[in-house]
Each structure stands twice: as C-alpha cells, then as structure tokens.
Image 1 (cartoon, one colour):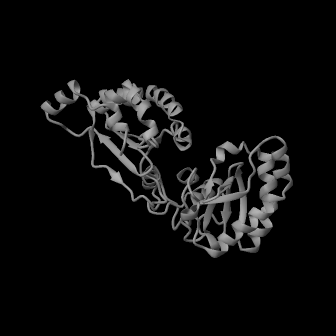
Image 2 (cartoon, rainbow, N blue to C red):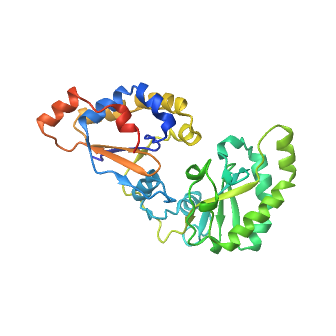
Image 3 (cartoon, helix red, strand yellow):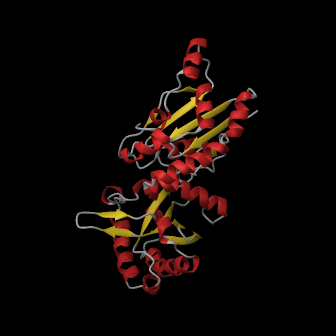
Length: 309
C-alpha cells in the first residue's frame, strides 16, 4: 500500500500583510491532522535559490535533479516531441515587464489574459530570431511554450511565480546570447500588431519573455513516489492577495478530509506545507502519551504554524 503523500505549495506565509487573516483563519481538518502528526526538521533553502521548496520536493518525487529540475524536457517527453530525451529545453513564458524608475519587475503572467491566437501569432513572429541562435520554439499553452536548443543547456531559471513583482535583474540568465535575444524580442514586440490590438482592448502588453525549467534529461525518469500536489493557494499568494488566500485555504481544508480518513484508518500519510523557501513535513511518527495529550488540549495556534517561517 502506497503512503498518501500530500504537498501544498504556498501553504505558509511570512508576509506581514498576511498576519490579520492568519489570526482569523479556521481550518478544522488541517488542525485535526496536525494534532495527529509530528513535524520533521524543516527544509530551508537559501534566499537566492532559484528553485522553490515545493519545486525541489516535486523534482525528487519525479526522479529529477532537485537542484536543477529539467521540467521543460520532462514536458517535451510527455508531449512526444522529437529530441525530448537528448536536447536541452526550457519553458518560455510570454511576459509583461513593468518598467520602473529604479528597476524592472515581472508582472504576473496570468494577469495577461493572453488568448491562444495572440500567443501563436507572437510565437510565429519570434521563432525566426530564436532559430538564428539555434533554438526551436514549440507551442504548448498560451502562457507556456517549449524552447529546444544547445544555448539552453545548463540554464537554471526560476519559475515565473518566484519572480513576480520582483526586480528581474538578479534572476536573468547569465548567457550573453539569451540576454541579447531578450533585448531583440522586446524591440520586436513593441511594434507587433498583437501589441496594438491588445492595447485597443485594454490588455497589458506582452513585452518580453521569461525562461525557466531549463535542462536536459540524462534518462527519462520514472516517478519515484506518488505525490498529490494541491495548487489552490498559488495564485493568491503570488499576487499577495491574502484575503483570497485565506478563502482558498478554507476551500482546500475540505479537500483534506480523505487524508484525515486515511490517517484514522491506520494508513501512512505525509503532509508537507511549503512557503517559497521552507518546507515543513508532518508524518505519523510515534509520540509520547503526554505529548499527544498536550497537543490535544494545547494545540499550537494556526498562525504560528502557517505564519513566519
């Protein structure tokens, strides 16, 4: 029997703006689970890590290199694209870069409301420039293309969620070729017909692209362990909308009932709560009767568990 393993990205928040909702938040299923489970030592990643805590754990579960997971190559393999196993790949996310006086920041790609016809038109316009540098583009979804080519080998790029609202400078690839390509595409996109049409309907401009998930597959990994990932909290957390995050947490809490039932039925369960850089793992490790009694009558406040990490 497989253990039930559940991973919740952005379950924890150390944003001071989240404090008020944390103090009001009631999550009865989660609280019951945490009374029955014991915490393991937390995983804490360095501040400048391009890989977030949940990505690292997902990569381990998928059999990928947790330091540099080749997500795009894995996706290419799933799509059956030629060269999926040997080529270097990366995700390309059409993006809006906010140009400020002191810095350039990455806008949330989901806020672009990019239609498929617009995305395909932009890809078609950009493809010849990428091809000149030995990179082929493949359409996947409006907000995610796949790039294939040698210049992407060794590329370690942070997922867009990691950079949204932040200065892009520390996160840009250190490849002069890729930086030049980004500059060229910014000029191309500025005058593109899709940009004009989007401006007319009040939509944000797609004025750049973001590279992430880079690397190659040395072998096609088999899944090491089944892992259920609940992504309900990602969008609100990335946008810093903590009132919505709290509502999404309450909706997610109801979906944890099967986990509680599995635990009560004597099955092995693992619950991992993540912030961007911290993962807290809870398992049914044995505890003393006294510790169980204390936890039952003096449970740790939810704001301490989900709050500053």
